[in-house]
Image (tube, rainbow, N blue to C red; front, side):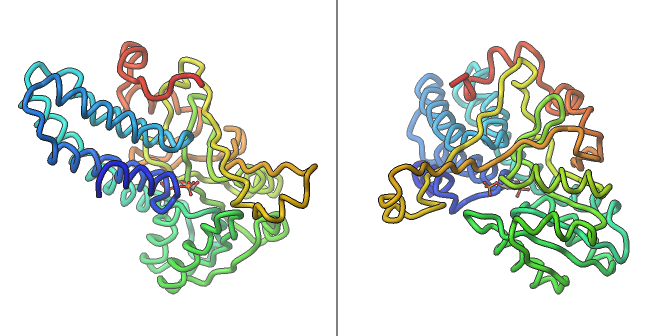
Length: 318
Ligand code: RI2
């Protein structure tokens, strides 16, 4: 798949999920590098960095995308020779893809330890990381039941219930607004994340925050399953995460809107769950309280202030 095709599929959400879009971007850059006829450092750098820039900004909220692109592009910016740049970039891109796949598996193992035999689990949207916790617990022989939400307007819940059903997990499919009504039957909520800020706030699919609020009120544990590359380094500098607002067509067809001249459809794709509503974030490095977000950014993503100011051009303030 070429660069524009991958960018288009990420934009239209044919390729979606914060982890998957990061791996797809890494793969697209690898393919682009393999097909490049550049033979000198300058033109290789120029082309690759322009390609990286294009992919990093396709969806504005999921920080996994600029994080992945930035991590794998570092050798491009730092190399002094063409062969060093190309080999360094390709090695980083391959290892990012492998690391990402391993991270999801590890999150599944750690997350499963927070699920107990007989538990009822609620999940929202379609998160590979969150689902892996549930699937791992089930594979370990635990008898679990799931409440999965529909996830308007894009219905990602349909993907979730298909996976759960194929695994043979007893699943209740509910509309998003029913989450509060069923919370009293739930033992633990697990969702994914598109971005996590330095103060431990979780940005995830719209509708996550009301579920976290209902869980808090009902004293139900609220867990977030997220690889470390979903933590947002530039929030250390005070940068805010931009919440993607998608086309109104996803919510109400244009023909219907045409008859409602005083109505504006608002369609934010994500919301913000404050750290106080999150009990634990399950990362591949272990389960941490949201207050440890700063350590993840500094120690595991290894971003320091110099990197933040020079290496990370993809999330400039709007
Ligand atoms: P994984 C998705 O965003 C959902 O918000 C999901 O919770 C999150 O990414 C993380 O997904 P979208 O692409 O990386 O559906 O855990 O907008 O799969």
